[in-house]
Amino acid sequence: MLTATKLTKYYPDVRAVRNVSLTLDAGRIMALVGESGSGKSTLLNLLAGLADADAGEVRFNDERVVGPSEKLVPGHPQIRLVPQEYQLMPNVSVRENITFALRYYEKNYRDFRVNELLRLCRLTDVQHRLPRQVSGGEKQRTAIARAVADRSPGSAGVVLLLDEPFSHLDLPNRLIVRDLLFDLVQHDHMTCLFVTHDATDALSIADMLGILRDGKLVQLGSPFDVYRQPATAYAARMTGTANILKAKHLPALGLPKTDDPDALVCLRPEAIMFDDTGVVGTVRAVFFRGSFSEVDVELSRYVCVRALTNRHGLRAGQQVGVRVAAESVWQIGY
Ligand SMILES: Nc1ncnc2c1ncn2[C@@H]1O[C@H](COP(=O)(O)OP(=O)(O)OP(=O)(O)O)[C@@H](O)[C@H]1O
Image (cartoon, rainbow, N blue to C red; front, side, top):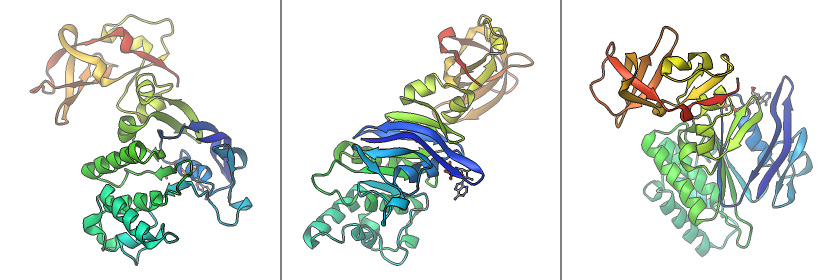
């Protein structure tokens, strides 16, 4: 188990991480989602023992994870960070990059484990190429394979920390990395925490999802709860498309007024149903997304909402009826 307690880190003109506390249970996946500059990389470095905290502490199975100021070789042997730029050795092959992590092991075991990792990470065919001769997705998987290679038998399991593991990848490669992380946790009993600015993959594989804003962990919960009940407009937007309205505009959606007209409410697009008996609006734009379309519907001069539908043939200017269930409206903070 990895825990952070009131972790804080200052740079000269910014408080990059503020009072962050979290617990990452063994065998679980946690994702932290935040916009650029919200402190994601700084927090990962603190958790890995690669940067010194100004306040607070990190513990791994009750042992304090110390920063570089207290340790000659920074880092913790069981906590492995895969940085955003992968940091592979450029002049040796994919295979040798992974083998390097096992250099102190006996040759037979080393070969066995490297072959196992190459298979698991789908790198067997490119194992003899240099990093610059493989794709971004293959580089990413090489960095993951190298990070998890040394399993230190009898230890309490490895914690894998990943900085934006999906950001440079196209959809097929994102799916491969997502499945790989899932496999590592399910079958290799790893624990994983990744940071990202895009919650798409986080929602599908994380057990716990946190929202980072200006260095603070502003919400932490299951992906379902954070998605359905975001605490703020920021949390709502970081986890997907959200219609954010003032409560006074709810009657335009056929819903009753609330006590505080200026309160903010969040309504996910899939909660808006197309229904000819609902309130009437005008289609403003249609974005085809494959299995569904996103449709902007104007309901009044002040209210335009985005809805999802698998109905085909909707066109801008067309009148449609929409209906919203009151229970899918969630009040949020600013
Ligand atoms: N070495 C540094 N010196 C001074 N300020 C820094 C340093 N590293 C990061 N910062 C600042 O700390 C804040 C958090 O940076 P950090 O890199 O942790 O954010 P991030 O969420 O990982 O951003 P990105 O998604 O763009 O990588 C930012 O305001 C950044 O400018």
